[in-house]
Image (cartoon, rainbow, N blue to C red; front, side, top):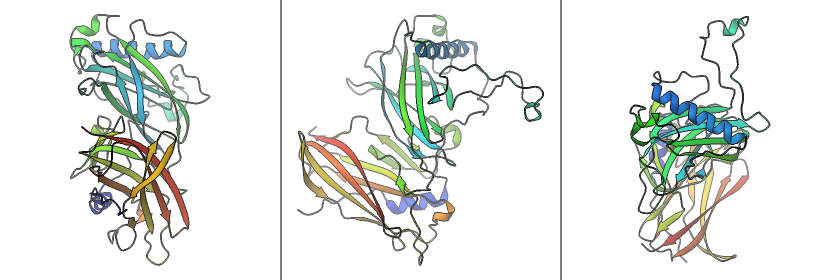
Length: 371
């Protein structure tokens, strides 16, 4: 069988963009000042959300629950040694009175108290002497509060909330509370927020293990199966990154929540390669990426097809590409599905570092249906 021919997300375009902008995203950093003073209505929302998570930790469920679930997350290298974790929440169809929601995210390292008291400033500590009262550093690995609109749903589908956090590698408990805000509006104004107890609140806990993607070892990010990938001229400014957690560097990615694609469409594949070794002669990496597809039938699977290998080396990379400068290798593929029969598939991605004599494999499952 002849290899299927992909329509690639321009690998040259991605690499040139990598050279011109920071490619490691970050979420709101701990200890940074929050923008703008909260309105009173927002303070009420914040107190309710934080109390809802505290109650959830202590075994008390919300009185008026909002049906929300953790749909998916991915792991990508962040600034420094941190791991960036964009995630998606799904809210049951019709559960929200309006798209306006308040979202609180709390990330707690395994073994740490899930509910901690604010740390008081030591007046005798020279390093803290200039800190303002009322600005204690968060006791959690990460926490954030935002007022936003949930994404519109497709026919019969859930509404979605996408956010992100960044943490050092390790095991964590992630607590998320989502509160509907009725007519209060996404900016915190309006009277609906004052109707205490009338809005629904959903709280969940998700355990994650953030991998080490610092580049000390040969590895990759999570594989993202995308509905679409758009290349932008410039990366988003930091204040917009949190609102668009799946916009990575110059790429605006719409991840597939279901892994289901149409025979009339295409599947996008995006990931990043870390820890590649530079070839002694060229000072460039020498990477080969193979994409193989297997069709699944029950517990059995059979080889279906593959694409031509993707080469990332001195001949294909821009002359200025430099691993020592922090440039990152993206793997990418956009594959039309017209030749794929309806059914379930496993994509096997084999990444080989020829310079280091190392190889690794990643897998992603998806399905194809006529639409």
